[in-house]
Image (cartoon, rainbow, N blue to C red; front, top):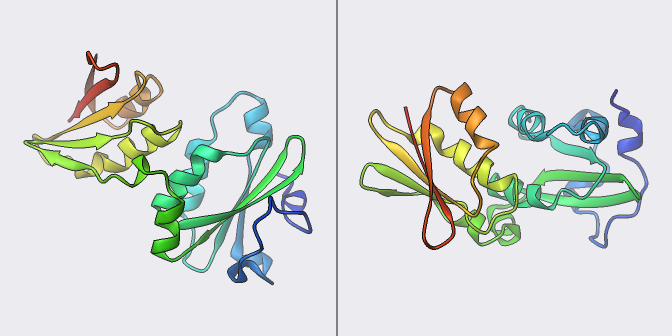
Length: 192
């Protein structure tokens, strides 16, 4: 069960001053998602997190409660124009507020690989997700799926075989094939 009241309040941030956009923010502009119980149960909360983010109005912020600092999520959210304020409230009690930042500030906080655009190569869109921490590679690949035109495909480059991606592709009706390259990374072709 979500315990929203414990997910915001007066706690010390991890050294970042509170941005002006978050000062005196009314509760009705906070969308709070507490995934602590889900993570403790060994479940992956990424889909719930992205659903919450996609439902945000322009004037709302997203508050995530987790048992650890979700560092890979920072790059994913920066790609979507969000900055973050991280608060550690206890050993397994983290509260991260994601808020819309100007495009330049968001781009500066994203890892270099996360900011590389997907580039078309022949009939394939190349999505280079190497060097990203999970769940960023999967998120980057999934967000590019709508770009596949009839007969087109995605060529996804990853550091690991993307095992968790396969069921998501199957759910969406995509076919895929993965090969390990001689350079040590994996190339996954995805098509309809």
